[in-house]
Length: 235
Image 1 (cartoon, helix red, strand yellow):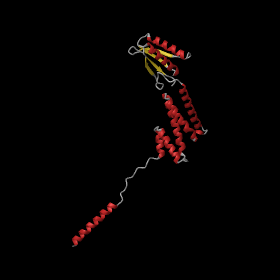
Image 2: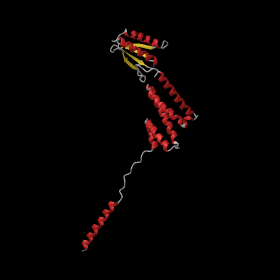
Image 3: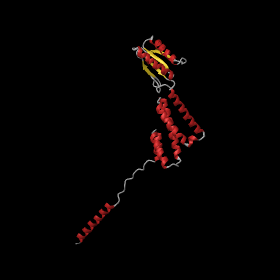
Image 4: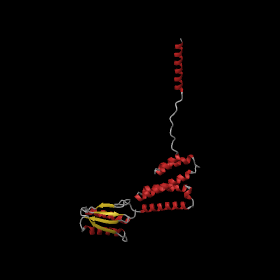
């Protein structure tokens, strides 16, 4: 009987051990903490995700209206929009520049550091006013007909085989030359084509602005069809 009793006690003890193991609490895997909302805001401003950053800033303002960090990030966001407007303006995208500048203007007056009277504040105000003046000038300027205002230069193949089409083309070129103060280089395969094209363009430029200082020349490029290179100096 003793061996049987011993085996019975061993089985019972093992059963209790299994039951204890099955009832022991399972340790949950550690869940990584979410990134701090302020860090996310900073990251979105740095990565130029400004619309997302503006939404985040509005949410943080609602949650913590007295948090001192609001001023700092609002100012950063306003300056990021201002920089964006300047980039778009340099590229000739007036509409996008106006939209970004409006967001900068909407955010800046609300930031105490921008509405104060210190030197940094005055510098920011001056920068904003300069951007607004540049935008107004760009809006007032006629839209480019031929050139890409954001590019260092534009090459236009001349329609020399169709005199009517070429004359219309020269009308557009003359308009852009005056509006964007372009230097002009005619590249032609024949020697006689250079003076002829320069005369046609000069007449059109003088008709638009008799006092405009036209800078043009021609080069002989026998391997190329006739074309003109326009180099703008006002974008």
